[in-house]
Image 1 (cartoon, rainbow, N blue to C red):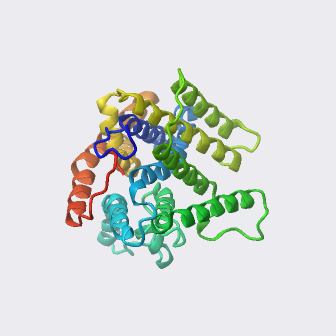
Image 2 (image 1 turned 60 degrees about the horizontal axis):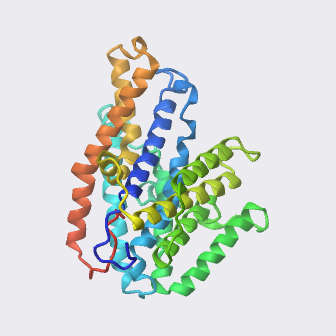
Image 3 (image 1 turned 135 degrees about the vertical axis):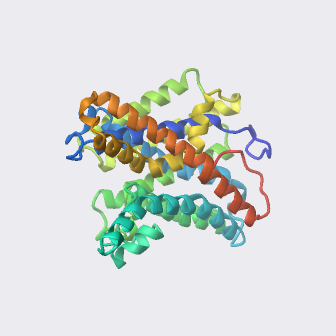
Length: 365
């Protein structure tokens, strides 16, 4: 697959990897949502899937990789490239987010209105930029619990404009950014960087950008059994992040997960360039709808668990069965939202503004 090939094949393996990462997050949240007092009152399945948040770390690396891989031909193209790029990012992130936000907040607002209470007591004026616009300095998002990660995504997407404006200058700024993240982690800065620019998640995004640039400009090495080595490296990174000396959610673990994720992506691209990787169609379709699944799964799981408790079967069924039903409902519902709402809306909005086409591989971005 030549980097500039207009008819480059779809990177199905990366779509499948995206689906697996989303499923890991769903499995983790399904067990943790069971700890609500009216449900089990404790984390389900003894926290078997507590490692699932590593899927979010993979997503951060994947974000940097995909936008670099897809928009590679536009790098350094000047300010004229920014409006079309920003429109694509906007329609990819916000319409379906606002739909899920409405589905999540709507019942609460209506219930409060019906009882004469303040309709949005959970939402103060200081929370509006963070909740509605996903601005990372505008308060913690309310209602949609996973939206905190979307704040980073919006920050990343905005920062990518520096590469579109001037490639070498943008790369220099990105290198400085990475150095500052590392310096902050080791306490070498007088104060924390604003807008969470010093968070290790930012370094994961930059790792993805570097991987995307290398994948588009060089022949990636591929040795026999490399996919097994990459998978083992990711598992080792998860174990280190969970059990390492710094403990969970520390800088070292984030770096390990970022490097392992970059290795997985580089390996998949190298394999795809040799020959298209055959993966289950269901995984590819779920990967394409993974953003909807990621946004809506907590809402869907809560609806299922509450319904089972309401009809009196929650405590009559084995915990594993309750968990399985909730996960199946969330995955099915997220896939339907993606196929029937998200993807058609994104396609329609992109047709409303059609910037000049540039050669790009057929991978969802």
